[in-house]
Image 1 (cartoon, rainbow, N blue to C red):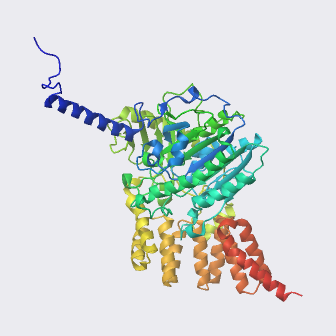
Image 2: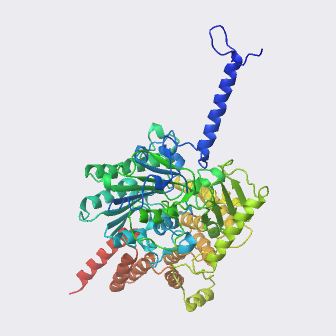
Length: 637
C-alpha cells in the first residue's frame, strides 16, 4: 500500500528531497512577490501593510465638509521611491506616516510628464487639450476655467498657494482663486541658461507657507497648496553629502522635501488642526532615471514618468492605512473627488471621475500626452492607459501588457493587434474631438501686421500656441541620445571645460534642429569666450526658423553689446511682439536709454520691466531704478 505521508528521517524531520521542494517553493514565492511588487498594476500587488478598499467604502460624500485642505504636490517624484509604496531605502517618514491614516492609490497616473500642464490638470479636472495647457513657459490657463482654489474660495475658504518653480508663477494662470499666491527664488539655486527652471528650495517654500499659516484668518477654514520642486534635476539636496545618500542624489532630494514637509505637519499638530485637515499628497509626474534611455522626463509617456503618487490622509476620516489597487485612477480625478469630499457644488464637463462613485467604468482609460518632442522637430506622443495595458500613438506605435511587462520592455503592438486597435480607435476619436474644438486658453496672439512684419524680416511666424505639433515620421525614440546630450553639455559648462562644452554644443546644435537649449547654451559659451560674432551667428540662424522669444531677446542683447543699434532695436521689437510680458525687453531698452543719457525714458522702461517680471528680474532692475532716481533728484531743482 503506497505511503502518501511525507518521507521523514528517524527524528520526524523532512528528507533532503522534501527540503529542496520547500526551498524551491519559497524561492518561487519570493520571486513572484518581487515581480508583483514592481508591477503594482494587479489585484495581488503588494499592499505594504495597507488594507485594499474601494474609496466609498471608507469615506462618504461630504465627509470633509468644513475641514481644512493641505494640498502638497511633489514635483518629479516617482512613487516607487517612497517608503509607503514599498521602497525599502526611502527616507520619507512624513509621507509614510500620513499613509498610516489615509488612502494610498497604487495605480495612479499623470496625464502629462510636464509640470505646468500636470498641475493644471489637477487644479481643473480636465485633460491638457481640454484646457489648452500643454507645455511649460508658453501656455497659460485661461481665466474661463474654474480652478480648485476658486471653488474653495467661493465656499468661504482662505486660500493660499506657495510654489517653488518659475513654471508655476502666477502669469501662467494657476493663481486663480488664491488670496495669496507666492513664488520666490532661492538665490543659490538660480540655474544658468535655464530660465524656466528657477526654483525655490523646500526649506524656503516651507517657511513661506508656515508664515502664512501662522498669520492666516482664523475665522474660516483654509485651502493651502504647497509645491516642492526639489526632486527635479539637477539634484542639489543639502542631504546629498550624507553617507546614506552616497550615489543617491535623487533620493536625497526627496528625503529633504519629506523633512521640510514634516514642519508643516508638526504645525498642524501643534495647533490641533490635524483631525479636521485633509492632507492630499500627489506627485505631478515621475522621472525616468535612465529607463528607456531617457535621463529625466518630458520626452516619453512610459510608466517611469507617468506613474504618480496620490495619498489622502486625515486621522478622523481614516482609522488605518488603506490602499486602492483594483483600478486605474488619474491626477485628473482629484478635482471632482475633492469637490465631493468637501461637499462643494459639483462642476460639469470634467474629464476626471469622482473617486467616490460606485458606478465605475470597467474599461476606464486615462489619456496621456507629451508635446515636448514637437519642440525639437519630432512627433508628439499620445497614449491611453488602462488598468493592465497601454497604447502609445507614435510614428512606431507601441502597445504594452502592464500586467506581465510593467517596465514596458516588450512592445506587443504586432502581437496584440485587436487590443491595440481598440485603444487606437478610442484615442484617435478623442484627438479628433479636441481638434474640432477650441480650448479656452490664453496665449500671445499676433496680428496679421505683426506676422507680415516678421515674415518681411525673414522670420517664421509662430503658430497660435507658440509651438508646432509636427506630423512626421520623426520618432523621439530615435533622438533620445541627442536630448540626453544636453546633460553632457551642461556638465562640461559647469566644470568650466569651455572648449569641450563648445565641441559638444556644436554637435548638438547640428543634430537637434529646432531645439533651443543647445543653441542658447552654445551662444553663452561663445560669449564667455569673448567670441560675440559666433554667438550672434548661432542665435540668428536659429531664430530665423524658430523665433523663440527669449532667444530673440538674447540675440538683441548680443547686438547691443556689439554696438549694432539698428539690429538691436529691430530684434527687440520682435521679442516684444512675441512675448509682451517678457520684462527683460524693457530692461534692456532702459539700459540703452540710460547710456544715451535719457534718464526719464530709462526710468519708465525700468519700472515697466519691474511691473511685468518682478520675480525673475526684480533683483536686477530695482538697483537700476534706485540709481536713476538718485541721478534725477540730483539734476532737477
